[in-house]
Length: 485
Ligand SMILES: Cc1ncc(COP(=O)(O)O)c(C=O)c1O
Picture 1 (tube, rainbow, N blue to C red):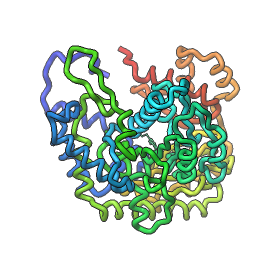
Picture 2 (picture 1 turned 90 degrees about the vertical axis):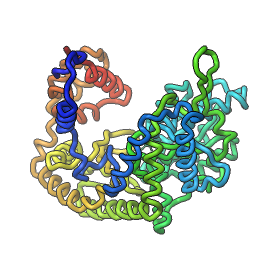
Picture 3 (picture 1 turned 180 degrees about the vertical axis):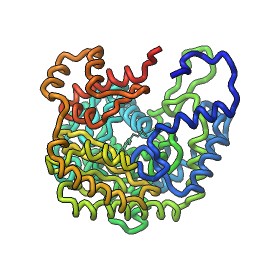
């Protein structure tokens, strides 16, 4: 890298754009529609509009809605539209946030602060989540000092075991959680049972619909069978719904919706202990751009119900293509019954290693996401099928099948470990960050500090226990983001 010191000489706009575009060249080429994660896209005209709307409100500051009533109006309007989709009735309120993680953290903060206010006997608050819930709940627990109890999911359906949830409730419990759906398997938990359990125990119930909130309502309109998951279910107190996933809004846009404002009051933070301007923040961010809200508002109006239904129909058809094609590849099997354009599958053949499969698919221009083995399911591959991915699903499955055949013919090679798992486990037992150097020799790395060989990275991670994985990942990412001058 030659740009590690603060520029002493001004460069032209042209030079800067050129350099920026050059940087993008090594990114995964999501524009092809063959990248099944990270990027959600619908029709190009919608994104052009959203980008323009985003830049139109880039500079306005959501820190103070009294001075930028435009942002107040946009946010209230976006939230009312999402609440309408989620059957929020006349009392639902909410806020736009920077992403699903922030929405979930706020739901947990709300539950914690409500308990502090109403239930003084709760000194060690805990939330109960299915083991398939997104890690942002653990992050919320970590940041907010709230205990996170995991309950199992069924090993075939991957739905939360509601009896186990009931058994896990104590007098310190503040919140029950269900996913609609979980990211890993695209499976929707039994929200009605979880919400009813919450009601019976006077607890809050949060539905994480970060991926499903902008998908399931339109799938229902299209008559796909979908379970009840929103505010129509008595006992659901809050819902996180990302707009930057199947809502197709540019990133930095999610929503947290509550059944009423009496609940939402606990989300707010106000601080009058300093001599400066008045601070009262509904969300985590203080200063914030109006871009995402303007983009969401514009996209909703531009696409309307019909536009989103078209997108959902394409995703559901793409999902079906994958499910049908998997039946023709006996070495791979679908995990659970995915409800939306999001699914995963695993291998039941020693000859077909999923990490080899993902890398070979990458060489053919596809990005499919590797999933490590867990207590819940085997190592597998995840696909998020958004509108612009959907037409590619048939050719994706043709390539996938061909690579499975290729791997079957070279069993020895695909099983080759290139490292000794016992040695790695041993090393991790006494791991210190400086051991990364020896590990990097096995992994290889490019000039950005990114490993060359993700097959080996994933195989190593796959042999480790979660605690060891986390230790290694933290050390690795800490190093990757460091500048070596
Ligand atoms: C179900 C679910 N919840 C929460 C999140 C976190 O969202 P974000 O990455 O926008 O913070 C995700 C992300 O994929 C998710 O799938």
